[in-house]
Length: 43
Image 1 (cartoon, rainbow, N blue to C red):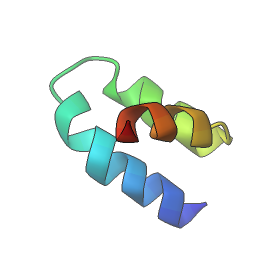
Image 2 (cartoon, one colour):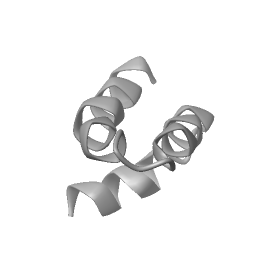
Image 3 (tube, rainbow, N blue to C red):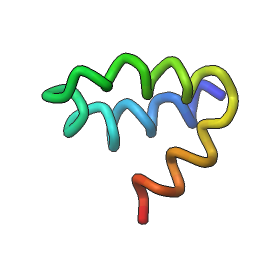
């Protein structure tokens, strides 16, 4: 899970840092359904 979380923060964290929803995305990614948001962000 750490690897997935790291990727989420590196890929989605950088652009989302400007947005206030950044922390929410990180929490959701750590919760487990990181596969769904990661797929959307990757696309």
